[in-house]
Image (cartoon, rainbow, N blue to C red; front, side, top):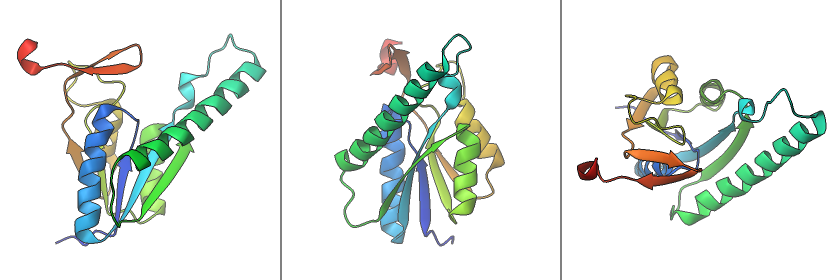
Length: 163
């Protein structure tokens, strides 16, 4: 059996992230392990050629501050008992930063959802989850996401029976 001392859960603040957090929390609690929550800000979302340098810097600063606050709220909203939780906010290409963090911090297991904010219903697995599953040198648990539709940055759950 694998001794789990550090569990990593990538968070994008979607409803599906809640599910990964729940599983990661349970694993950490059962193994008396540390839980690492990581959010990666992808700079490609605010890199637009038309923008002025000052606009890009302002957008970057706001995104970073908002993500930091959301990560803090996310941690506080979910009951987590006596386990140690580490919050990490990094900028870069999500799958690369998650895998790099895992190596640098002796992570034993990654818990990720199959889809986050960029969920496309016709895809088997999201791009980030797929790359992490294929490239990780450690155990990865991929949680099946709810069928979701992204509408104006708000995820609305659909009942599968209605589809």
